[in-house]
Image 1 (cartoon, one colour):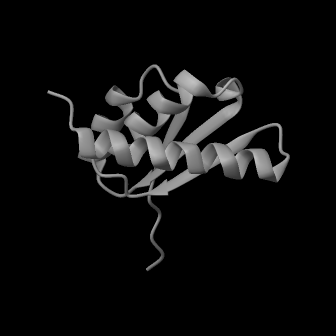
Image 2 (cartoon, helix red, strand yellow; image 1 turned 45 degrees about the vertical axis):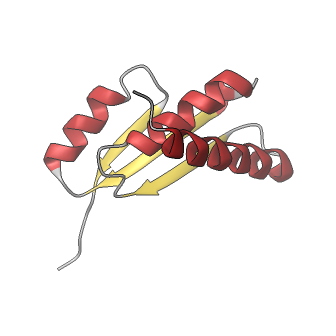
Image 3 (tube, helix red, strand yellow; image 1 turned 90 degrees about the vertical axis):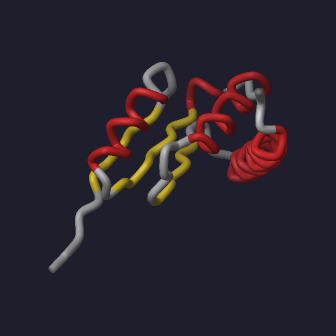
Length: 92
C-alpha cells in the first residue's frame, strides 16, 4: 500500500527542489540532508524527480547520518540512485 501523505509531501518537496535548481541557474545541484532516518521520504522525492526532471542525472543527494545501522539501510535503499551517505563527524 502506498502512503499517499508521504507521496504528496515528497512530490511537493520535489517540485520545490526542481524550482530552486532552475532558479539557481546551476548545471548541477546537490541536496544535503542531515539525519534522514531510514530515507523513505528522500527516496520518494528522488523517485518523483527522476520521473519529471530532465536534468536528474546531474542531481546529487547527500545524507549526513550518525547511525551506522541507518547508513547501511540508506545505502541499500538508494543503491540505484545518485547519492552519498556520509558518517557524521562530531567534534569533542
